[in-house]
Image (cartoon, rainbow, N blue to C red):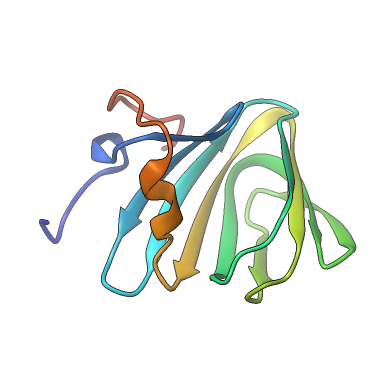
Length: 121
């Protein structure tokens, strides 16, 4: 693996209907660009990974451990390991940068999409 890449060069993965992830795996962390179609719902779930995120474009409503928050471009969030959370993209969709520790190896079995330009930048 090269030390350099671009968003357009990352292998897109279909994580949920209306949600495409572009993960970049390191030895101990995963970073991903997550692209939501408008009003797409990510159902409540949890995982062992700690997760931090930053809204790059659009908006999303997150529910983390029962606390609901509307997030606009520039907003950040942190989710501890094992905490239930869900989200819904705003009317214009959303692009989010997430960071996970440890690596999100569970995505290795998700459908791969053709490499193409993303919605961001």
